[in-house]
Length: 143
Image (cartoon, rainbow, N blue to C red; front, side, top):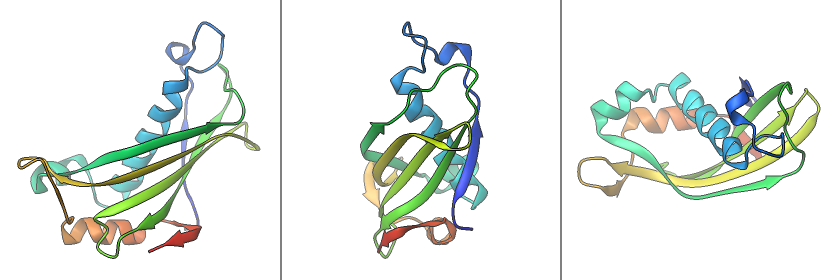
């Protein structure tokens, strides 16, 4: 699989007073898509709760290219941009495409895994490492 893609719906509640999608919704669309790619590869909410290890973000940056409006069809494409050998730290690139052919935004996130009980950074469990190994990699992936 070269890219993981998730379709998203623009809801009326996503629209701001300028009649386009509120900037923070771009981040929400991508966060949901990242959780879908993790869940599809075995890092489900149940697994996160059982392992007491969850993803956290250090940085989230968006480059807005085209505005999104109510009625646009959007899809989010996700690839792993870089990761440590043990997948303790990682970066994703998320692209939001509108109406099939216009790049609307590029969101890059840097994150890691945190022990949710100790509130400390940790190396993820083996099952999470396998999941990350299965996620599509960007053409310029760096490990």
